Image (cartoon, rainbow, N blue to C red; front, side):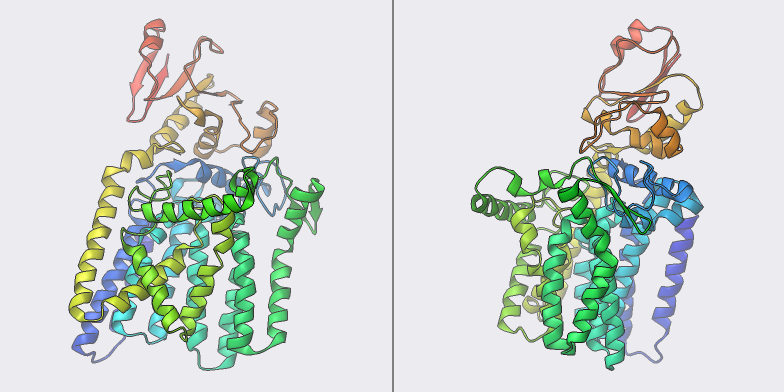
Length: 548
């Protein structure tokens, strides 16, 4: 029902958009129809079966139960009041997206739809705002279409919007920032320019809470942007100082967070906010300086691996990008290189300068953080922008543009088909994803008071408890009172709580005479069923349900 209401509202807005011009020319009619088609595609690829096409990722489950806990109890799932960073697995989770989902989870209840819906809506809103900013800037019809198609219909911005993994909100925030900057650039009065500028500063400030791996990027981007703004926009030390004060006012809790986790190692409460002390930082595994190799050798290797991941289109995580496609369609990165070359030949365009600043601000990430598509998500937007610029530079005639669009939409069709059909089962039931069927089995089993064993057949058994809590939320106070004490770790392994036990293999000895077992289909249950003839087996597509 919510899906229908959202789509219908967006459709009405689109109709209004198409009918606002009186006596349009033939060329304008074609442009409007083409742009309407792009908008419809942008919305469709972000909303199609958003609650069922993919399984529930373990990070989504963890974010969801923390959002539900904050919404209903005012604490995260580890009983922390007003955390600036979620404790989550033990190595933490960024707070911004789970916090944004609180109203949705509070009103709609915890579900895949309610937790993913804010990501989808923000992605659509940022996409529409970007298109509107192109129109506001009076870009040529061709430029509006090419930039909108390449940026908004590439996997780099489609895939993150379909998963509610909290770090995926970062490229969406950058899309808002790009839109605000275009409005700023083409505004007529200084007062209006300053309004858009402060929206950029505010969005940059809150984006620090979106993904901690991008703090290096944000540091470089803010520094370069302020220098550039002083020289090109306002020539005002006062505005730059006020911007720095604003950033500090919003982000000081994260500075305190760094102090707590890397210096004092003691949790603090300041102004009612909890500066979370994590069990372990993920930085130990993500920063290449922890590898023990010589630093220059590590940096050179990391840069090589980053380019390899981008060009090959595969980081080993299917939820981040399909093999052979990745964030950018095949051959499209070459157009980004062409776009950058054209930028150096004529670097006077201020929008190009801004996006180049965004691009080079990723230098520390590329040098120091082990590459995968999530870690590189601040690179997505500037690369797509320069892809668009490269295409505009190479394909200058209407005929050439048509050839390119045929090529692009052929790639788009292949990507869509593979995502929906070829890799569907792996996206539903992957290494870190669980099918919605499992949640239904959990709810059924939960209605009984019998011991429940969840058998995964792999190492995910230590984290599958989040799926149980997502399917059937329980009070964080009750959860913490029922769990067996475990040693804090980067990924704290909970193998039992209440009536649930989480195991890799079928148990040899069970707690009682009447148990329920939910077993992944990769685990062979034939021997178990022969030894326990009083148990009944109910086959699912991905899991088996066994009970007396």
